[in-house]
Image (cartoon, rainbow, N blue to C red; front, top):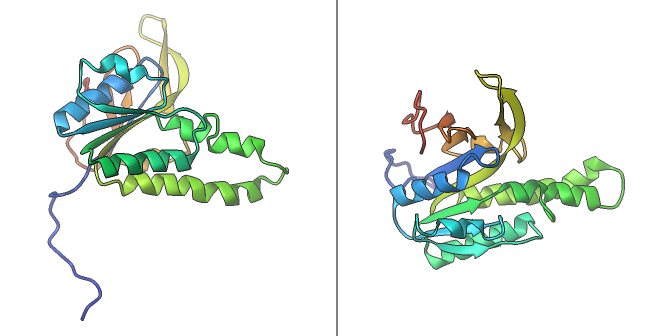
Length: 208
């Protein structure tokens, strides 16, 4: 008997993995709420932003878990597992940047580990971060993950400073683990897809 069985590929049963990347004030949380409402089903939100998502409880009916420091990858993984066990059909992680650079996150641990050999430190830290990524990829619900943008100021057409996000405050390349990755502008809240496996958002620029 063959160990592996092939089946005809369809879009049925495929869970979304959506990344929302933008500077502070770009509307990542509101965009996540709108997406979750559009997907439908029982929604949960892991809140690392000091209960800020509760301000949007009039926009979306959702369960919330307040995740404070330490923001270790293990605590994120446990929180996502608790959501899966509770049967949530959509999970919002707001935000994942704390796992990378918040108190108790990967970079925090790097700075607070004994010794000066960063190569040896990363041998311990990388598997922990990869377990966090694997938990997101294999989560049984639709997943919407916000990431803070690396803020940078540029001048707009009227020579006024405008803050934009230059990639996520996360390990480089994390956005490519997702089905769709949106960059959200601060001033307009307009989203553009930097990666889109669905091919639904090519050349589409609008608020989510």
